Every structure is written in structure tokens, then in C-alpha cells.
Picture 1 (cartoon, one colour):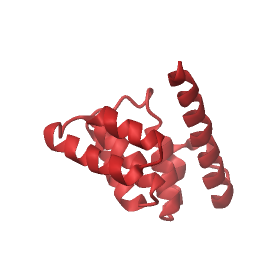
Picture 2 (cartoon, helix red, strand yellow; picture 1 turned 135 degrees about the horizontal axis):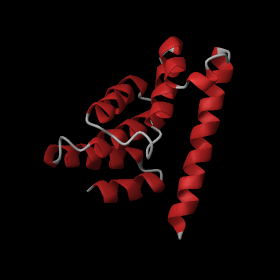
Picture 3 (cartoon, helix red, strand yellow; picture 1 turned 60 degrees about the vertical axis):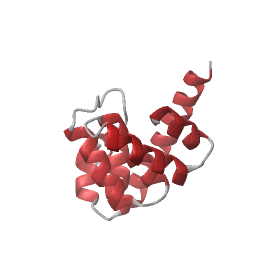
Picture 4 (cartoon, one colour; picture 1 turned 30 degrees about the vertical axis):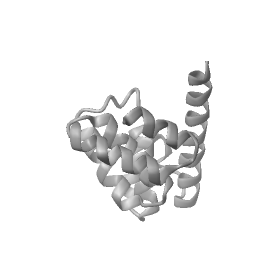
Length: 123
């Protein structure tokens, strides 16, 4: 189900992907990658409060933060709900940026990482 949902995300079908991720969580409620995927889908859908909960849960369950940009997504969501101090603690190298610049830089970092990830997985 997770793989099917990932394919739906690639085609921009986030609502359908979210439904599949949620179904998968019923069978694997301790899988941190599923919570991460739920959080990313919710963030893309601009449901930032819900995304934050799922992303924090993924970290709580032991998500490999070196393999997944969970802190970038968390910082983005925190900034979108006006928790800039928390957002800046998640990405300290951008802590001196203004709020507007901070959010824009996070978006660019996520876009860059996602396009790099897509290129690596095309072959």
C-alpha cells in the first residue's frame, strides 16, 4: 500500500495517496516511514497542523533523519503555522533569516532535494 501511495504522490494524486497511507497505518502503526509519508502528503495539501503531528510521530518512532528530510518538512510546517522559533531550531543554519526568507529557503531546499531524489529514482 505504501508503494502504491508513493506512486499516487508522484502523479499528484495526494488525496488518494493519503487514504492509502492511512489504510497502511492500520496494518503497520509503528512504521515511521508511513507517518513521514502522511506528513509530506498533508504538507503538500497545506494541512500543516496535521502534517506536523504525523512528522513528529515519525521521529518519535525512530525515522532515520539522515535518510529523510523530516526536519525540513517540520520546519516548513512550523513556519506555516507561525511557529518560527520552533522552525528555526529545526534548521539552525537558517536561524538568522527573516521569517519570509526562512520559509522561502526551506521551500527551495525541499524542492531541490525532491528533484534530486526523483532523478536518482528514475534509473
